[in-house]
Length: 312
Length: 277
Image 1 (tube, one colour):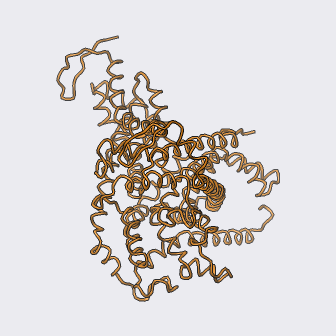
Image 2 (image 1 turned 60 degrees about the vertical axis):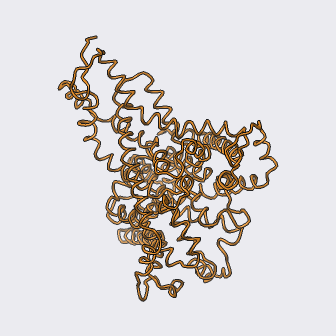
Image 3 (image 1 turned 45 degrees about the vertical axis):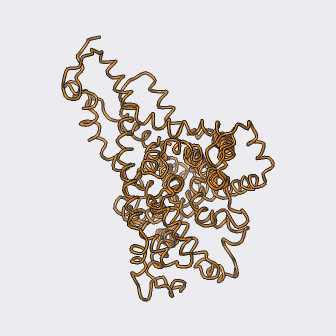
């Protein structure tokens, strides 16, 4: 190992002699340090803190009292927790398939490269540029009782007197619809990327063998899209369960109502923490959310065989 | 398809194009509707005409003069710009080190960083809030900006990009006696221009549109960002949809303009992020 003199930024000879290997290691560590420390501090540490806080009762003034697993046992007898869990499940069960079908459907519709399709893709994607708060406000306006454009459209096809956000049976569905409208362009793009990766020869071979378009879709497109499907199902399910996308929508459109019919687990956690200052209980609920996420990840991993696929 | 004659195939294609157009118009309809109401006077809001009979600018004037909306816009712009610049600075540095420099524990650091990828804000919002509060950063620009900087997504994409660069460029610089900082600033950064441009747009967009964290960390109206402001705006002017839609338009239009200019980069960067994910 040849020893060379390090030079500091200004070109001055440094006092310490280091090998090139050591210099590279020091540089590497220093270059990574800001992000590594930041991620540790603002993501890693909060995750650990959540576990820690969940065994305390925290009062409004920041006083901590150790309560063991009381926050966890409290969940069992908390009807609002169970209701929020049910709403989260309903939301996920509606959102994930709807996004899968609309995302893939739109991608298939505009997958051929052409000037026309490029414009159409942009139009489908445009809602993604708008914030969820704006989306929530616009949808709220469209479904205003009696006067909203969608309310009147519903009336014109024989669904008069419908209340999209006032009816507890309908409110979550309305929010889901707004979320699908907002997100479908994103998933369309992801599917377009996946479709591009399927070798054209497979379709040609299938056509020569006399396969119909439907058969090509079921026996070529869908199986070969498995990695993309894994990504889409996982990301949309995680988004639905954590309410990463839905929180803003619900906060503005319904505040969880009517009758808690749109109160997702995340909305409930937020309410417990920031309205009632029940940080300990909120942290326990958040810990449960992490466990749920892990379970869902494993489920989709198994469902799509880890996103792997074989070309026969 | 081979059984169809050419004219039949054309008809099929035309029908599909028509279906696509109808769906695309439906997709952007809510945005057109927002624009339409923003230009309507209060009496015309719920009339069914999409094009206002007498378009007015009163709603915009009201929002920009009667509400401190400029302040919210400036807050949002400054926060988004600072987060974008600082994040790209740190992420390019980290991406460069993770892809090109050998140091002990590199793989562990990368895996640890990557594992934060699936942790979305709602999951950690309670402990993050407590942490930021204990650091004395509640109701401050620091509280709004610093936690928003750190995100594994950008680091990951940049690392992948740097892995694909040819080694020769760096070697030439080393022979010329350049240090690592010098290589980073005069070789790596100039080469990353395209991916930095794409990420800058994505980061700016994400921060411009972010709501949950600013809502949580800054209750002081002087620190409100536009998203928090319009969410509160609505509860104050519940019935005045023309004002609400004008405010929404002011918030949404900068991003829609950005999209019209940078469609390609935005859509390509999202497509690749999905593939690599």
